[in-house]
Length: 79
Figure 1 (cartoon, helix red, strand yellow):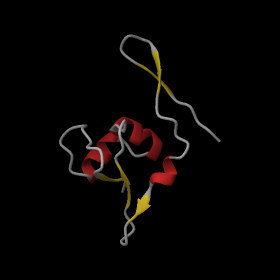
Figure 2: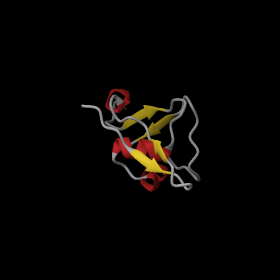
Figure 3: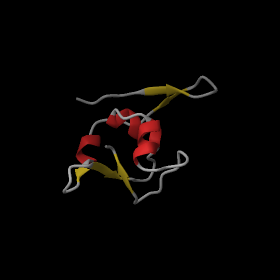
Figure 4: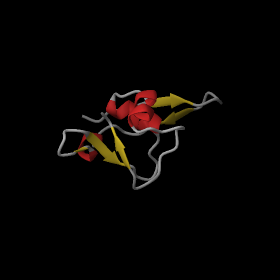
């Protein structure tokens, strides 16, 4: 089933967030059992957090990120 999530921006306008259908298809697993995705254009830690059910802070901790920036083509671990 398709899930639609909406988020209000600071101007109180409703904007669509990432559609969560298909996200699980992007998750890969390393030989040692760690799950990850490859960052694609439009990805944000917030959207990945919603889709993966891992908090932004936890994603930052797992990946040793100092800020919320992610780079297209890079690997982001989910656990």
